[in-house]
Length: 174
Image (tube, rainbow, N blue to C red; front, side):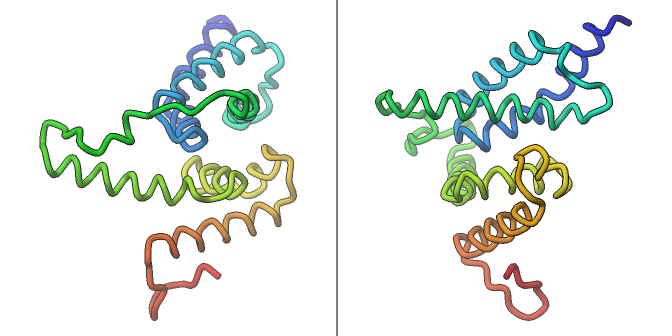
């Protein structure tokens, strides 16, 4: 199998992870899909710069993050846009159950969205993408202690936003 085919196969197999990370950054499935597409294009164009002895996921997440930062900078000069997910009066095929589930997911997404960019990035990398603290620190180019403190603050902020009581029998996030 040629290197290009194996690289493409690896990229395709990793698409769900790329999309999940992109959604955490953009807050929108459509924007995330655009970000993933741009990341795939960039990864394929620069596949020769990938070191096979390094982590593929860290390399592709860095591409996604850099593209996202570029997009945020460009959006500062653009006007606002409307997202279909913000439309509460659109019901799915199961009616009320779908609307309630979507509202709960929206609440969680909103709580994550209210985290600082730094906390959200660390939360997604460590808790969703299963990066070690060390790997997340390397990807974000920050000390491991900073990863740990940002993650602790992110968790504490989510607990507070969710109204969760860390009573007896539950570990504290502080």
